[in-house]
Image 1 (cartoon, rainbow, N blue to C red):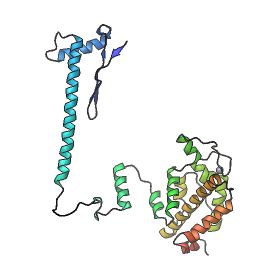
Image 2 (spheres, rainbow, N blue to C red; image 1 turned 90 degrees about the vertical axis):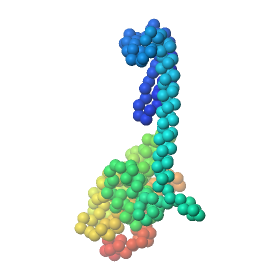
Image 3 (cartoon, protein in one colour; image 1 turned 90 degrees about the horizontal axis):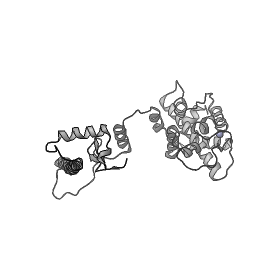
Image 4 (tube, rainbow, N blue to C red; image 1 turned 135 degrees about the vertical axis):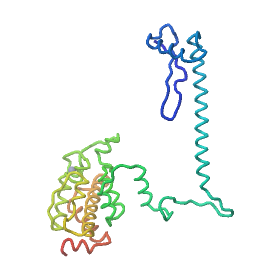
Length: 286
Ligand SMILES: [Zn+2]
């Protein structure tokens, strides 16, 4: 059945009324016809009116209603703007300036913006991020670690998920399994050897968890002080960021996967790159 569609929607804030009129009223389904007659009976002055005229009138009514809703919405916005302007105190001779209204100091800080975003977005906040942001690692390494924890880095599996064409899904460091976040940093035979070398260097033995957040949160000493555990977290950040950097070097610079090279880079970063190298020395009893 061909149908002729009138102005279909009455826009409202949350609801939309849909109206559809068939071209040939004779072919209207009985159920729809019954409902249309009920509607006609409810509209004063429409008794005896043919269906076509009746719906033309409804169409005009809807258009008028839509225009009124638009006008009311504009008035509402203007009233909100007016209310906001009431709080503004104009001072003659004083130039306009930007004010950061979040926080007591009225000075912009990344922390205040972060807190505000968290407040607006809601949701659960994982405690691993508090530990992560306390690390004294370089910002680039911290950002890499955050992307690993959030699974937002450009691994081959993630690229395919974002519909990016990838020739080969296999991990470039071992060539055995798909390059997912869990694999590249914690399951990969190459990464596992890097972790083992670091554990040996630090004089500890540990289980390597597959889940990034579990791995990070358990990379600590249970009886150690907060500052010492911050060093442990920072070493974790260093290991992860160096594995990622080495993986990129292998892919983009046609490098060779070398465990000892990654381990040496981790040692250098943890020993000289961060501002508390003496604590690393404490960890390994040097
Ligand atoms: Zn691998």
